[in-house]
Image 1 (cartoon, rainbow over the protein chains, first blue to last red):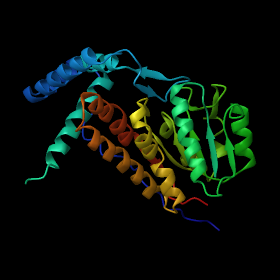
Image 2 (image 1 turned 60 degrees about the horizontal axis):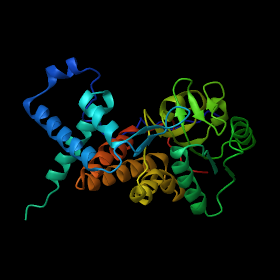
Image 3 (image 1 turned 90 degrees about the vertical axis):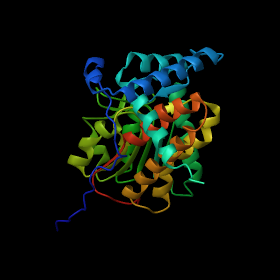
Length: 108
Length: 199
């Protein structure tokens, strides 16, 4: 007897921002605000790299490939500055989370 | 349920810690716990062949290409040529690219896969250990509580998102971890195949 299984569409978290693969492509979509936001993040990351005792110590691992690829504070800052796909994703996520944080702030 | 994990570098060590926590919480529902040194590609395949239809929880590296979940011998234990091992199985694969590498298991073999599309990120910070473990295991705990896969993946997305929302209010390091680890993982989680519960 044939059975019918209820298929579930792929469920994922909302992707409100897409990472961009090249800075030339991004440049045309940049607004003054997004440029300012990125600049502010880079300033913060540079300050962090400066202040942290071990800026090249791995802080994050990636469960891809045969062995872990790792990211230190310095690597994260480099990705953001060089506007790699990961760097662009970090900035987009940072902006999205900051916006959510502002929206959830109580009025009184 | 089957719990399979590896440990040969810092990422797999963090994921092993999660796997062992899940084993503790399994409350007699565990069929096989397969860890190092037995979780090599041969051991993984042998275990899956011996326990068909049983829910699988996999913790380790994943790669693309060659498409698959990496075993303790650093060879793909589950890959495009042996996805029939996952036939009609509920699979929770905590590794990079598992949503892509196991997609054919749901399309061709009726598997239900909760996995990560793209990279799965892990924080090495000691103060993230407890929170991160809770997020990584949120779907598994939901399944153990009797929920279906759709409910379980929502629990995991919510857990990662809530953690990111909290951390963004902290230091620059916290915000970096929120944006690079928790939020990326929330965005990467994906469910494919028929919605089902653990047997």
